[in-house]
Image (cartoon, rainbow, N blue to C red):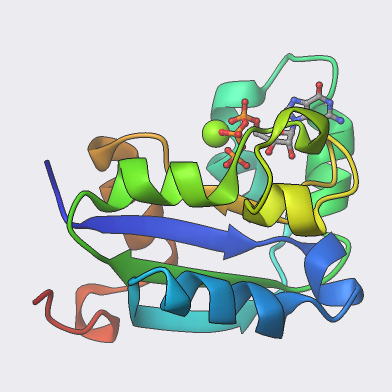
Length: 141
Ligand code: GTP
Ligand code: MG
């Protein structure tokens, strides 16, 4: 069990000016932000980040969506971070997400679902180092 995870607030949430509310909810849930920045992903970066979904029917829509405006990427620190953060964001499809979760509150659809959270400790490490160099991440506590 690791104590870090990676998150990305997606373009739909930023367009709707919900990123402040979302960050507030993350912090209020006990996560520390140990790295954060706003970036516009290139198609190349997006394809690399979502390589696992290459070939799926929604792949092109996903790449177009995630590159249509800036995202906020961040590394988060908390005990049991990956699992707790997945619980906080809720199911991929907001219609299936539990009340009070970030996707229930802020996501529009399964495609435009406001936020990403790593699904394993290994992926948290891979995704964090995709966006941040080691010296951009504050020491874990
Ligand atoms: P992430 O935290 O973003 O990785 O979401 P997830 O782990 O809950 O879902 P998954 O990794 O299976 O899918 C990655 C992303 O692809 C989702 O968050 C959606 O943005 C998008 N996606 C997944 N399934 C669909 C779908 O059926 N249609 C569309 N349009 N997009 C989808
Ligand atoms: Mg995923």
